[in-house]
Length: 294
Image (tube, rainbow, N blue to C red; front, side, top):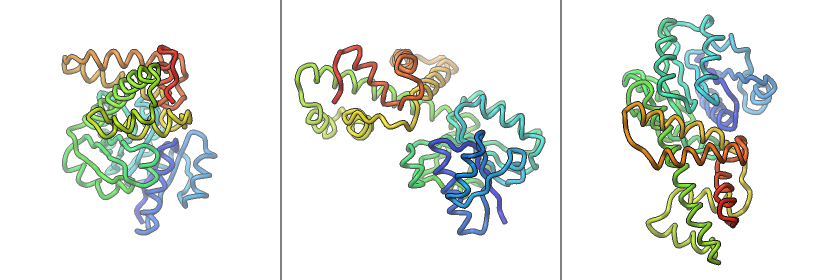
């Protein structure tokens, strides 16, 4: 019986671990789940047929998945678990982490015979529920190929480079998310101040060259409705765009637009609140323009 483990049952982790459980039910395997708040693991087990377990028991799994807020959280868990790991285990870290952390964590785990791959995901909670996430994998090609079949939550899995490359791509992707959100918000706020119907404006934009995921999906569903459902936190978006700037700095690149939006995103996280949905970034645009986007 093959055993997998999943560490971290946040908004993304719950459906991702559920997808693993569905696959395990078909193949005769089992999925262990752990969360800092044990009641969440117990609730997951009751609903999805996983098994809540103590952290040290996760070492018995052949594949360990983690989806935690930051690389620092992963470091902490590795420190608590590394004495219980078995050689040959593969650790697939789906955290939106830092490329430098991936390299140091892999080196640390290799001393235990454990191979770590960075494997952040994109697609949001809806993609996790539907098991259609895009996974960006960093690590040796042979190890990536060996783990593909374990990614039950993935609709697409792309090997983007060596260790840390997955985290780098994820950070830049989320930086572009912030840029697209902010730019669309500025434009819509100006149109709103001029009396334009913003729903109609978005219909035009989304049939034209200015469209993006922000204009097609996020703004109509979350901003115009004033819903701002809490899925991916504004503070985490600020963290990710900060990582993207570290990637730029690491190659001595130039990214003035990313830097400006990073500063604005940090300001929004402080002023609006880090736990607000990332689309609440546009509340700062609204304050700057004295104009709601609705």
